[in-house]
Amino acid sequence: MDELYRYLWYFFIYAFLGWCSEVCFAAAKNGRFVNRGFLNGPWCPIYGSGVCIVVFCLTPLRGSVPLLFVGSVLLTSALELVTGFVLEKLFQQKWWDYSDMPFNIGGYVCLLFSLVWGLACLLIMNVFHPMVARLVDWLPHTLGVGLLCALGAVMLADLAATVSTILKLNEKLRRLDELAGRIRSASDDIGTVLSDGTLSLAEKSAAVGEALEEKKADRAQKRALYEQEDAERKAAREKALERRRAALQELKAANDELLATYHFGQKRLLRAFPGMKSTRHSEALEQMKQRLKNLKK
Image 1 (cartoon, helix red, strand yellow):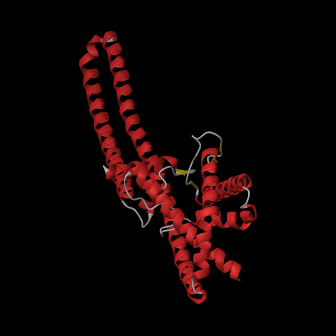
Image 2 (tube, rainbow, N blue to C red):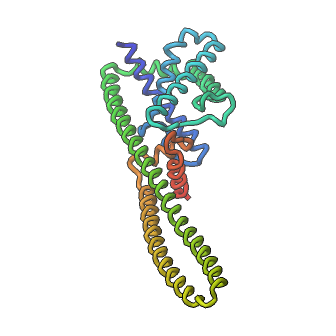
Image 3 (cartoon, rainbow, N blue to C red):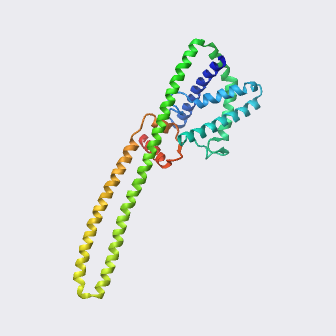
């Protein structure tokens, strides 16, 4: 139990420190605060899990820098690969993508960041972790257990809220895709009405021209009949166009309203993972990201 107690503290401490490093990196890159991480709170569980795995598996190798480095690269890369794959399959979102980086595996991991994690683990194991271990041992056990229970309850609530946010985001993306399809269909209908009317007018004009050549005597009668039919067609076409234009405007208004409405945490997720990709609704997700980018201007 004492070992479990220690590793739980290691998990929360390194999850927090990982979140801090992500926030600092984002601030240096973007010039502003971004609440990075999958969850809403100040923690990145993948960092806590990664360091715990490295500490548990590689502590016997602390005396060998090459072995510790290689082991850290392999373990952290495996964790990132599995985490990225599982999150994508669960939520239909690819949260990060290294596809444009050399020597990547499915976009989930790449050589450069794997080497960075290896170097970071060397620093952690030889510099930071001894201090963290002493801090955990210094903390009164009863107080430590109480704090762990509180932190665990908060993280579980955070996880539930995040999952709910993602499910609502996916539903919103589905509705945006559905509206986009209906908008395209309405636009196509308007184009069809316009083109059919143009073709019909051209064909009728040609037919009248031929009739006028064949029967000069019936010219006035045929022209009057043509003008009457043409007026009726134009009126019907205008009504049809008006209905389709009104429907198109309603669809666009619904699309804009949906884009302007965000449930709790959705903006944060989109800003925290700017490279996020949807495996089912990529067009709608890009539309939302562009809308957020425009709001910041």
